[in-house]
Length: 140
Image 1 (tube, rainbow, N blue to C red):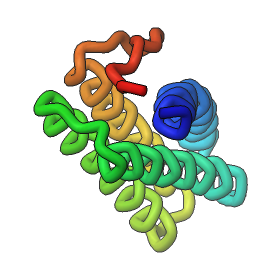
Image 2: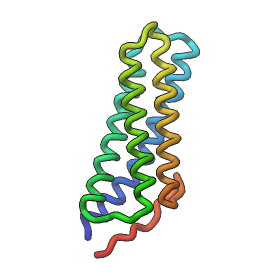
Image 3: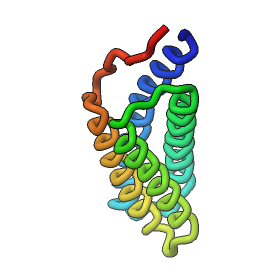
Image 4: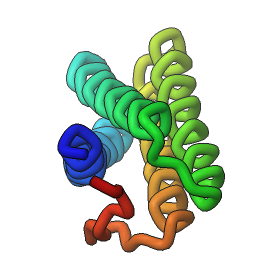
């Protein structure tokens, strides 16, 4: 099924963009925390991009399962990925209202780090490496 292959490779490839934006967000947040930055906008933007990409990834994963690409090992994968999305959203929401402003970067840093750890665990839960794309078990 061409649609399933397209969804699989989109879902699998989007992981690299999430990892890249997550890494950039962590580096910026660490720098902002170390230098006690008062300008919160770059951190909010990076955090929003990260959360948006995680949400998009979650949507593609749900679509794949809804279209029939399900096997028991996916349970651990889905739990870890849902956890990553919840952590990412929660950290960004908490960072919006935290005072003083300088502490917001620390929350974002922790949220992205924990989300990335959960993402790595979720990828490994289905027996794949974080930096390789396995051949999908999709029938035509």
